[in-house]
Length: 321
Ligand SMILES: NC(=O)c1ccc[n+]([C@@H]2O[C@H](COP(=O)([O-])OP(=O)(O)OC[C@H]3O[C@@H](n4cnc5c(N)ncnc54)[C@H](OP(=O)(O)O)[C@@H]3O)[C@@H](O)[C@H]2O)c1
Image (cartoon, rainbow, N blue to C red; front, side):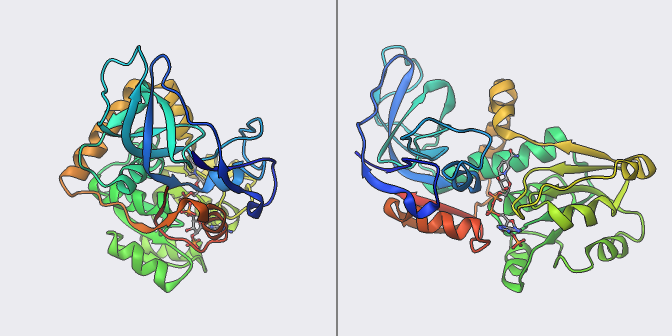
């Protein structure tokens, strides 16, 4: 089958579009014919050796995919050939077929395959962050950094469902318009962020920050937190892992809270399954709607990842084998 192959940790243009053996359905595995593979920021880090996980070469990247079950292993109980499903798969999504344990697969019925991918890493991370990690409450103020990105758009939509006032932060007029279209109450740039957040909260400070960016934006947010606030550490798309003077947390009585969705899915499979059911329910009720920026041929993976890591993408991107 055709797949994107990473032969060495190297710049993105070294990714190869080539042939690899078809996956086999053994044990509790199903083989899925991929209709859409979700593109995620960490995929671009992983293939360059810049991520916490460093797989053996060669490998096929891609941590989420959706499509049709093509074959099932002898221990598979729930699924059958022909079911449409989505899965998280730490590797292997950027391919015509992917194998996955039945435990990590959920049915999607007639849902669009790219939407199903978006509900996994992007919506899954934002949902877990706001629900379990921040315990966001009705009426609280939520600030979303990188608000037009894949997790950012999801955080805006979920923040609104949970009853928060959402302030989106994004770097261009176009991205701020996208944030507003997705439900943000206000959308601002990164300039004078600390002063603007203080003014916008009447001096009280922010309740919850969803930070995927790090660097100076983290610093501004740490100085804008309200009492009992929760500053969520989600990612460092800006490139710089910030250092933090902990006296700020003491003086302002706020918490810095880490978010690692992949670890959450492995450690709390039951809560993860409940979260997915809630997200699917919101999707079916039309309360969340993934923003799919584009659908590109599998062979374009390197080009797409270059744009994602270069701040040039919005919402979610899917690769179509
Ligand atoms: N902790 C977890 O479980 C988890 C799960 C998923 C993703 N993540 C991490 O969260 C971060 C965002 O993921 P995502 O899927 O939302 O990515 P994305 O769609 O590419 O969005 C990232 C946003 O970050 C902002 N940004 C600021 N400086 C940037 C730079 N130098 N390069 C690229 N973007 C920059 C951009 O918005 P502006 O231009 O508006 O600033 C961009 O829209 C990544 O670091 C990813 O690894 C963490």
